[in-house]
Length: 91
Image 1 (cartoon, one colour):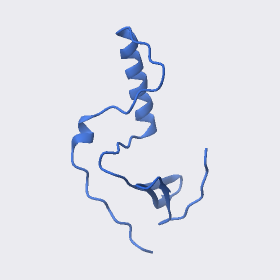
Image 2 (cartoon, helix red, strand yellow; image 1 turned 45 degrees about the vertical axis):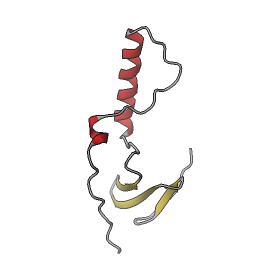
Image 3 (cartoon, helix red, strand yellow; image 1 turned 90 degrees about the vertical axis):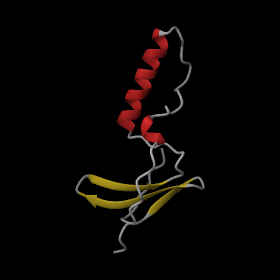
């Protein structure tokens, strides 16, 4: 795991087309802004873990043995247009 320290309005770049910026820090809550291509699905980790568990259980019920973590599911939400990006104010 790579661990980085960032301040408000500082970013990290993942590959050529994903940027994660620290928008705000309040106590133990950090607000992040993510810029990514529209085709990129972004999930909260706790939801992703539930989806993976449910997909594995459904696959096993059907007799299929999963050998690796399944790919991201295509959801109804991923087909909706993205909400316009909120630009952080420069402090």
